[in-house]
Image (tube, rainbow, N blue to C red; front, top):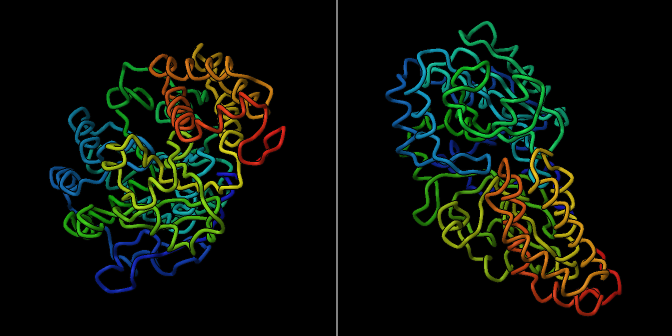
Length: 430
């Protein structure tokens, strides 16, 4: 199983009724691989409302309940308010489209086909918090998205009072983290930094800075057009809003899907054509997320709050399905090795802790380690959170802890017998 194997397919489970059409970020012309022009964007959605004061926009976002879509899930309105209270027109907006998470393709898909929604949201944020400069921070490997955003900025240059710049982010998992983005823009070093000062006090160029995921900005632009009641009415079964998710693994149509929050895991998979084989487990939220047994989450509403209540993560909206004929120990070992390689390299827990966990987990997966090594992995995983210079080791430890729970029997079998409980082979393979 590869969580990075999701394609660019788009799946739209929303019914095509007039009341629901405006709910989609990726609305018609659905599946068009070309970037929508500014003229087409305005024709489809209308102009972004003008003359909206910051005192009106921020409460609107707060009332909508929208949370950030970059992974942390912080309330968008509260984040904007904090910055608005600290700036006097000198703030900077960073529209974060780095998307270094291997299992996610939602941000690059959004930017590639709906770049002007992202520009709308960034301009709205700039007006709301008092900013002149907007920086679009896009992963350099997402070449289609980079080209689309560059063209959109050019199309809008003559009609805006904002200074808009495009910066390409270097490849790397941690390079999309908010402080890493600011650090790279300031100095060319894409490693995360620790606080204080907070970015809302001192970020790009020493100015108060808002770093917001591009999907969050696009939804802010939609809420500004259609209102917070529209956003809250979109979700299912009492949940508010919609979101982009990326499906991968044992699902017929891999790629980006726009769901109503409250949609269950099973319904999202069904809208993508269903499973290709029996599914043993699901990874939710990506490499900073959590493993769960498929039977335990198939009817789970996809929404940050109920997922957090169950110790799960919505994160950046990844749903990765692990087939029953694949080894969860082997897949987890590959993820942990990746996380160790992607260390920011600036603290012991990341450099040494993740490397040790990754190495021992790989040995267990290969049938080369026993119960004592498994015990060390369990102990190190419990000790790692909260000790790093950034949250990279915390996220890796969260995923590892969930793997030890979900695949606990398999880990024990590997350690005791040197064989894979799934494949039966001497050396596990996935």
